[in-house]
Length: 437
Image (cartoon, rainbow, N blue to C red; front, side, top):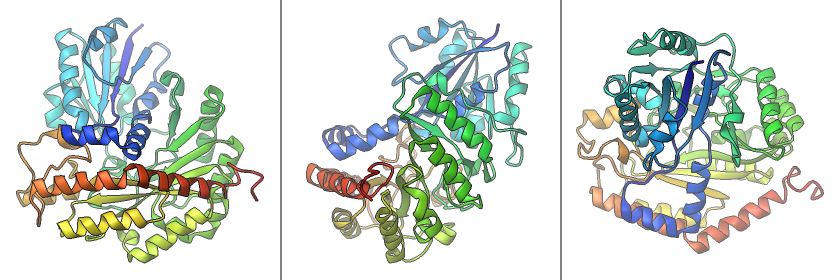
């Protein structure tokens, strides 16, 4: 029987050594790093769910690919190795793919980065998938069996499979968190965003599929914590009451990403906590610059903050996301943002550097103006390393400002303060504390 080995290279990365060393000493930063690294990749296990019965498979999510990892995968005698990677890990993925090809094992690489840079990826793989993998996966497998892989498999943004495939959650082993998609893409188009809308048009998963996937997860882990791996869960037109009914029936704790506008939707706030939601990650972005393409998200700051307060008053924590280094950033604006974050009532914070991922309008804008740093390759595109020349700061000033902000915002006292805020909010969550109301 033919065998495919799935390898995903995701997780948490920082290129700058002194920032990495600092981050590992800060409790709040460690918490965010741990949360990011625990989330399993969904794309490959979804393709695994589409495998014909004639194929066998294995799944690998290595922390690092040295120390005999290639030999470990080769023990399965794979006919095909399928690799998925994000931008900061894609160079590592290319090296890994080259290693398998030296051993005469065919490789295929896909993912968001590869879909935007297919010519680059083609230098390191026998086949490259451009766009969503599901529409072309069975064709690719058939070609593999015939030993006739095409160099490129292209799924257009309008192309899709007739049915949503059930992911092979069982391949993940004993994980702390599971991921589940209830939609693909996002109807908004923020110019810094490298979300799945770049490879597929926005569409929502049918209720029956969501129910089946939740049941599969619950079978593996009764008290599962689930991330809805959506780009913007409540941005579409789904029946939110049916959606919440399914989540309540599943009796799980979950968190997701959504924009601030849900804080102005009472029909959502009324059911959010009871349906098991414990946290919403929402982008406030920058205090000095409003990104093009943000559409309905682009309003005055006070309105966003009020909406976030409403979410937390409903018993659900808000992880406020902020981007440092946008147009107009100065040392003074960094100081203002630091003070704002230290005084804010967000239950959690995610602060990252502006990162121009390939395929985004931000990348094109900085590339056209000659501001991308040519000496910094894809391994620097971590969200925590500077990859471009700021407009009003030097690279060193932005790096130092970010490092100082991280030290303040994720330090012991600030982290303890946010933990208390989270505890207070969750006491109002009827799912977590059913006797509190």
